[in-house]
Structures are given as structure tokens and as C-alpha cells.
Length: 440
Image 1: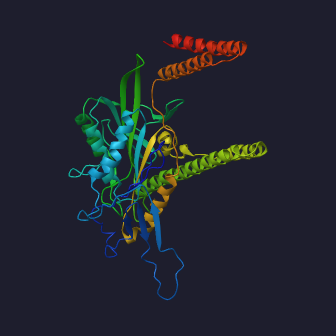
Image 2: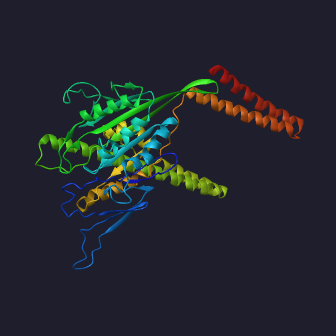
């Protein structure tokens, strides 16, 4: 299991969580492991490459570096990472960010049978991140639970048979972003009620037997917890609304003509949304890299002479317009996760892989996939009342201007110049104070 923290503005965590016991497919090659974990590094070796008969130019050992590395294959291993350790590193940071008023998203990605649902949901004997977050967050909040199956959104907390649940439509609010129309919201006052809703939704999820797993999740599930905190700031009542999205993605699966037509359609829709997610992550990473490069060049240009600044600025402005288009709407999954992937959210990515030699290609693909994600930089902000924020900013500006006025009065400036500056600053202070009075 691996995790990474990209920047103080956005938290992206890559978390490698192999299953405790290798599956029958993973054990076909004698249970040999291709993955090694060493502190903050993960190494993957292609054991199928042989040097017999000459020199082989293919890469045999690749190394990836992340902020945290967890190994969860053998409980007897001294470096074994339990679900509790994962929660202390990831779950606690999720709750901390939400309590500060930020939106948070934690999603798991990886091939079928690699441990995504185990990490997010867990088992009765070893609970995962989502139940632990629900148990700790003993506060009044609202919960919703949906699944995306065959590019259709279904409410997991609405009564009725699985096949008869209606498909819901995805809309987009001009300020709040994408949302699901008519999705049921359930107010809970303690952790037990939240756990009951979570268990009800898990029981309603669509699962099926696949090559790698006997009960594989065949849908993307999003469990959302929304907190509303009433606070008093500068003698003004205000509300801070924060949202936690806990996402368990369906596993990627290779097509098999031996399966029924419905299973092939199901697999193709899963792969379509995961491919779109990969394209979105790659485009966001490229745009973030381009923005950081422009900022660094601008800082260098500002230190040079005036002639260089003008030429560099014009070239950068042209390059800044060549940002990649982000195809959020190409799948329902990326559309709903629009804010979480590239907007107002602190995001944690959990990428699970199998350590088996037989899963080398899928494991390498997942690690490369997550390497792109670490370059994305979101700009999360506290979800406070805009009027309260504006009043606070105006009051801070008033205090700053008054300090400037006091400084001018204490200096030995010429009377005419002093009067002119004092009059201008006093007028700005008066205008700001009037704005604050009207807003109150």
C-alpha cells in the first residue's frame, strides 16, 4: 500500500493494499511476488524476463517513490500495515480537513480483486476506511449513497428491488457543480445511524463473479457525508458546509467472450469510465505542470531586465492558452467527481495492486496511472458564507488602511502631501465601513 501527499493545497494519496491471501489466479506461478516495498519506495520486477540465450534489453526493475508505503500481504511480516494504521494516516486527515470546512474526496482505484473494497469498506472482522470515518464522525450530518452501473446512477438507499430502482439524472449547478437530481438525503444524529445506512447501501450494491474475484463490485459506489457547522465569527452567525466523498470504484476487467452479453456490456462500461478517469487525470496533471512551469519562468523573468520581461510574458501568455481540454462529461463518474479531481476539494487517491507476478502488467499500469495523479494540484477553499467572508475581508482592509493613516500622521511629511494622502485613504476607509454596515 502506498500513499503520497502532493502539496499543501491538495492531498493525493496512493495506497497499495494487496489482499491478505493470494487468489487462485495469483498463485498460478507458485505465489511469486513481483512487488517489493522499501520505506517510501515501491519496486516492481518483471520476473518473466530471462537473460538466457543473450542480453534482454527490456526493463526488468522499475521504482516508484511516494510519501507513504504500506505492505499488507502477510500479517506476520514486521512491516505489515493494518487497517487501523491506514485509518490513522488517511481517515484522520479526512476528518480533520472536513472539520475545517473543506470538501474532501477519497477514492480507490485498481484492478479487480486487488483490495479496493477491502480498503474502503473492509470486512466485519477488519473494517475499512468508510465505516471507521462514520464511527468517529459522531455529529449531525446528512448522508447519501449511490452507485453508477452501466453509466446509470442508482440510489442505494431507496427501497425497492435492485433491478427496479429508477435511474437518476445528473445535473450541474452553476455554483455548486454537478449533482444527482432526486437523490435521497438522510439526516443522521449519531454514528450508529450512519453505519446502518452504509450497511444498507452495501447490501444493495451489484456484485458478480469475475476472473479475479468471486464477488467483485460491478459498479462505482459513492458514499457522501455532508456536515453543516454553525459558528459565530466577528459576532456574526455563519454556516460552514463540508462534504466528504468516499468512492469505491469498480475494478477494471478484461473482456472474455465466454461471458454472457450482459457481462461484456457491463465490463465495457466499467472500462470506459476508468479510461475516461485516466484521461482526465492525465490532462489535469499536464495542465498543473504547465501552470507551475509558467509561474517559475515568470519569477525568473521578473528578476531580469525590462526588455526580457516583456518578451517572456508574451510567450507565456500564448503557452497558457494551450491547456488541455478536460473531458469530464465523457462519463458519469468523472462528471460527478469534477470538483474532487480538479476543483474545490482535498483529494486522496487510493490505488490498490496485486503483488503477484501474474498481475505484473495490471500492477505496472496502476502505478503509472497514480504517478500522473500526483502532479494534479487542486485549490480547495473553506466553504463559508460568502457574505461573512466579504465582511471579514473588508474589516481587515479597514484595519490595514487605518494603520497606514496612523503611519502618515506620525511622519514629517509636507502638509500638502500629507493632507492629500490622508484624504484619499480616509475616503476608502469610509466607503468600506459603509459597505460593512449595509451588509449587516
